[in-house]
Length: 441
Image 1 (tube, helix red, strand yellow):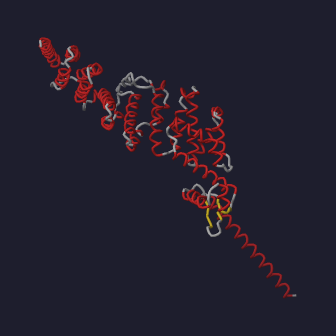
Image 2 (image 1 turned 60 degrees about the vertical axis):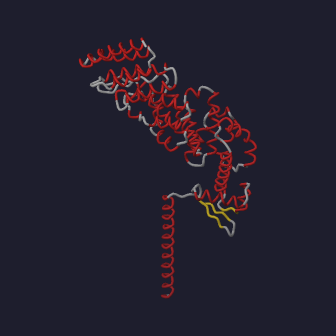
Image 3 (image 1 turned 30 degrees about the horizontal axis):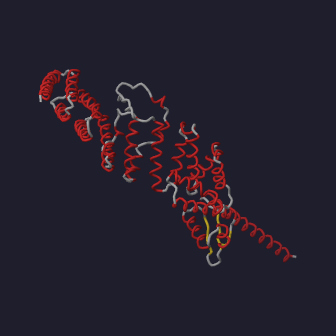
């Protein structure tokens, strides 16, 4: 009780000093008095008194901004010293209420929310942690370091993915432009001009920009895996593969290059996929994993691939990837077969103008009904142009023509027609002249 009495007396004394300094407009004196009060409470381990004094000091009439900032920063150092989780949460909530709506302590508020969200997550309250993090819009904070902003948004995305809120995860991820990771750090550090916001140094636990790049793409892989968007997953792995620290370490880039190869094969055929496929084949590192180089070459080569042979060769590799990546499963195996069938149909369309359905089914190792189904799907998705004569059982493939080609062919046809008309007129005129001459004779 004596200690409590001494503490109250000391606080009372310092509160009087703080009042005098505040009314006199002494910034340094007010700041020192406020922080000394907090230090007294901390040294006495009087956590409830500490919370009360933080609220009391922040609400005093005409309280100086510098004093509030110093007080919040001082109290934040005590968070890790708290005896139990409940006391820690109480202190964080007190500091949150003090810093709410005050632009000069917005960075401290963001860090406090992040700490509170981490505690909630450890308690298994992921939805609550995600809601807490989403309350803070760090992208509007001018004084916060770029890396700290990115790390905060990535934490928001991660919590949304953990609670399977994929729509919000996508909205939040769009706040980060992938171009920001390619910025040159050495050029970034410019001397601030007069009138510019002074950017604070990031917290000690914030990763570097390249580490954040990897975290960002790993989170995007989780998001795209939900939709089975193989091409986007492949592009994410490609971006991770381009990180210098990954490229220098074979133990890291070999598994990533394997995944790039698998997802390239699984992605539907389109110009972006073809471009990525060719650029990956040109990569010298691919020769380190010859099986996958052969797989990609088969996809690029315009030859029919036997599904059974391919599956027997790569089944074990596919299963290994499923265990390590936890992303390739039954759905991926079905999609792989689908891609091989699509590749084979494209190959057939290159070599044949007309083919019977029966022969097409033989080449694809499918029944006639399945061959027709896959061909129809490709025509609907505009991957190729074909017409099926079902009574005759004949498929007619046509090359895709753009509008210019169609107009040119019309123009050529009209020219031919006019030439024929002109020749016919000439021949008729000639016959008439010969006939007239014969009559005169």
